[in-house]
Image (cartoon, rainbow, N blue to C red; front, side, top):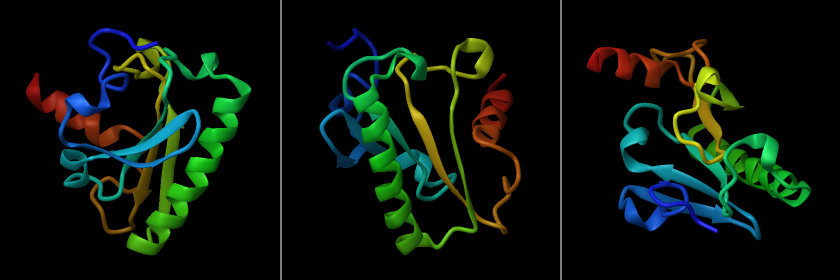
Length: 131
């Protein structure tokens, strides 16, 4: 059940996106261009198109939690971050810009310019610079 034009329903259409882990219902993906901004950042997304977090099944919640733990173990080993920003943006007013549910997993570092700024601060700054 994919939706036309949804980048998370068509992962292979974007050569920068890499599936790092997957389980029965979800993927953990990383995108090359985002690694240049906040290294190690990625998304956990359901394989089936669900427009937001409130549509996830019990299995998708369980599988999301499993991938979140696997991603944290991998990121802790690779980068030893000082913290994480983890969260869902839901609805346009909530900051969601792609309407396929996705959980942001962002390692944070004390010495990075966005430390203490929240989940999408760096994205919003980039968008403001374009306007």
